[in-house]
Amino acid sequence: MKNKILLTVLTAVILLSSLPLGSHALETPKLKYAPYAAVYNIENDEYCYSQSIDTQTAPAGTVKIMTAILAIEHYADDMNEEITVKESWLKGVTGITAGFKAGERLTAEKVISTLVICSANDSAYILANAISGSTDAFVEKMNDKAKELGMKDTFYVNPTGTDADGMHTSVRDVVTVSKYAATFPKYTEISDSPSVGLDATDYNYQRTLYSRNYFVSNYYNTRYLDKSVFGFNSGMSGNAGWCLSIAGKSSSGLTYIVVVMGAYDPELEEGETLEKFFVSGYEDAELLLNWAYDGFGYFTIIDTSTMVCEVPIKLSSKVDHVIALPEKKIVAFLPLDTDIETAVEKKWTITEKELRAPLSKGEKVGSLTVTINGEEKITVDLVAKNNVDRNGALLILDNTVRFITHPIVVVLGILAIALIGIYVAFMAKYLAKKRQVVKYKDDNKPSRKNLSGK
Picture 1 (cartoon, helix red, strand yellow):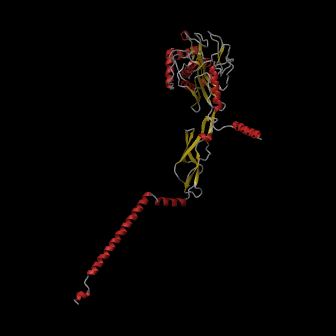
Picture 2 (picture 1 turned 30 degrees about the vertical axis):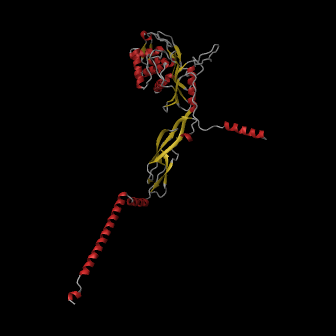
Picture 3 (picture 1 turned 60 degrees about the vertical axis):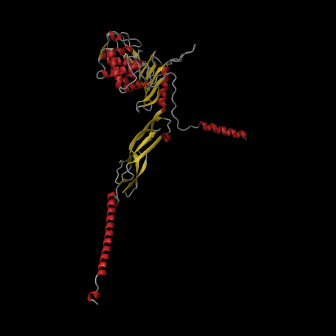
């Protein structure tokens, strides 16, 4: 018997522990490799995740985002403008290149495409010199643009992101420049392309170059391909580690920018090997991107058909109150596991304690403020649900009462009563005195007997 009771209790405990709990905060992802990272939602201008986003660090290839922006702005009116490559522009170029040769004539769009898609360093120097006349002048332009965008932790030294003394940025600033890049359709169109084709020239052969963004193309790495990703840049340097700025759109239509910086592959013990195509920066970026896709969405906090309160109304013979509705729907961008019942607080104020007919449907009667997790989100007007007609007899009665009870009328009435009281008191006193005078006269008037001497 005891064993049966014990078994029943244990079963109940197990069942209870398996039940879903109430509201809980979305679990924060734990990055393994990147010390600096962020997830930013474009539509709501909101950081969903941040880790040391204001710490200055080496920028690596994220510098090319700014280089591409300036190039797209410069050639916006004619992306087919020809650029003739000069020998001096290619001197000292190292790292990944598109293999351009001096004397080649290329369209601006092709050079920009190789910069964005292939992360080509020679493309960056070609654009810098073609636009500004020298690399130094172009870098100055980059720093001016950074200041214009409010990038307080950024200083550029070259247009590629190759390690250089004094060059730095931060995750917040990379989010800022990426957010700005997303406003250019040409930029997102190019960065979403898995490859770029180059025609043969007098100096070079026809070839196809593939994206260095492993989320966009699987040419170099087949581990991370993700069709939801459309930008922006991936790069690595000795000082910076892996630095990525990734833009992706979820199935629900929300656009996220994921930035990870300073990621290095783990040190291996003797005999250990990394999994095939493993890249530390991509591991953390993929984790954050999927976390954002799965964890956030829109909640309808209140609809335009939701009754907020009833407001008393006078002068109508049909109703004594009107229903107040929100003028606009209130929608909030929140973690999907948010318990709306406990997270949301609604407060409303009414324009007048008691409304007066007539009242039109949609007419403002107050306001509603919604607070989510203690933070004020939005305030909307409250409007009347229906028309309310006025009753003429009630209007006359109400106007009469309003006139009688008006403060000035009340004061005048009190004064009038006081004056009447004073007048009555005065007249009473006057009449009393007059009677006394008459009586005195009567008492002192000689009688007929006295007058006759008898």
